[in-house]
Image 1 (spheres, rainbow, N blue to C red):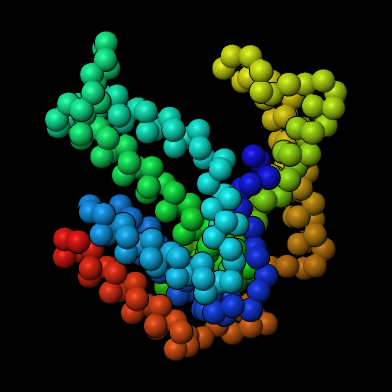
Image 2 (cartoon, rainbow, N blue to C red; image 1 turned 120 degrees about the vertical axis):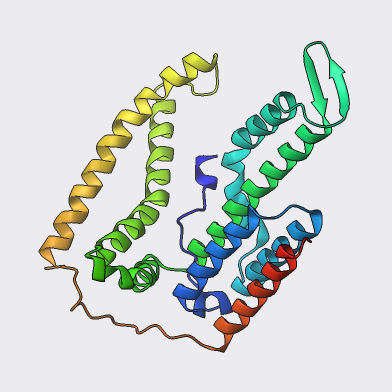
Length: 264
């Protein structure tokens, strides 16, 4: 299940999505995330899903690969679904058993949260799969650049977020390696109650934290040895510029926004 996490991974390619301006992709992703929490009807969700499927199609990445990142979230999805079903008592009672009561309002709320979580993860996954860490850093820095007049460290903030995204798949691989090593030594992570499983995670977390700090130290040393420094005078190998495809994507998301904001 750990290996199924795709958020933060980059899938090299030359598709329409890969060639889009990273600034536009980042802004449109934020817009879609906001729209997800504004949707109130089935038609609104259908519009967001249509945009997501179009983005996946244009990225030349299989839908199965994108949705693979949902598998590690099944526990959270089921847990939040059950909480909302049994603890929200608004609306007509659909089923009642002992002290539990399933209402129409609770069921609708549970489905809404589950769908929103799936869409949220899928949309951000498409962004990271089609945008390299360097492009994300440059895009964030350019978007945050107006805040530098307020002495906001735009470059440092963008670099920090990019490194955090880049370390997600690295830590996932490290976790999987540690779990296999501990399993070979006789450890079991799937048996016992909740408390026993929590205690069983200690042999994983300790070496994982040690490895994370070691990798961070190695990264800092590598950057220093290459005389890396941020700042306004830093040059870039590739200059970002908007193209026709970026404005077409903007028009599509703007159309979906109008569609949802007018009550659909």
